[in-house]
Amino acid sequence: MEEDAQAFIEELERKREAPITWRTYATWYGNNHSIFREFGVFLYRCKDMFHFEDFERTPSMFGISLKPKKKLEPFIKYEGSFSLDDVESTRPIPKSVAFKATHGSIELSQVREASLLDKAFRQMVEMVTLKDGTVHFFELMDRKQFVNELQKRNKEE
Image 1: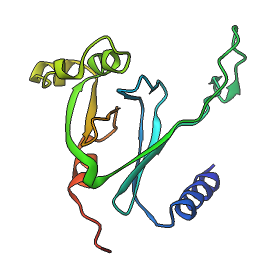
Image 2 (image 1 turned 90 degrees about the vertical axis):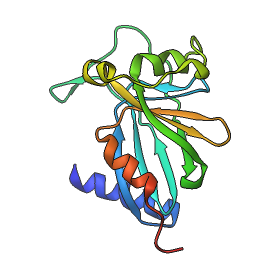
Image 3 (image 1 turned 120 degrees about the vertical axis):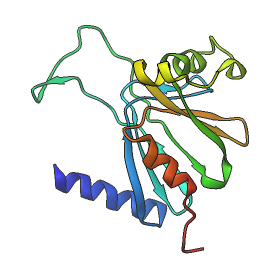
Image 4 (image 1 turned 180 degrees about the vertical axis):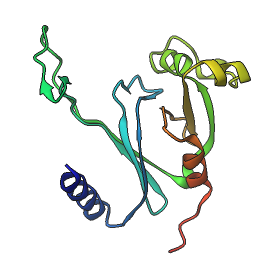
């Protein structure tokens, strides 16, 4: 398993022609173009670019694949990226609000700052707004790490 992960990382580094300097798994992903992934995306950084992609998930229990009772939609891989320079703002918001924004049932202009109660009692996601108006929602394992990465400039330039 560890060898598979290392081979995957090496393949991504060849594809991006740069080393991966930071990586995490976002357990939920959505954006303002009606795309969401309930089982998350792999999020990583090469130079001053952040890349993310999802994976096909096979339901399993205790390592045994489960056959679904109903026919599933075919898997369509989703990949995206954004430059560090493209990030206009980032902030935590409740996941339920992000879900509504992803599905178009709430306007992005209506998304308010998360309150202390929200942060204490609700699942939070990071709302990343880009200069072109695109908004990404990532449910991150460690928000502070991501914010720190947004503040770092690539030293190779």
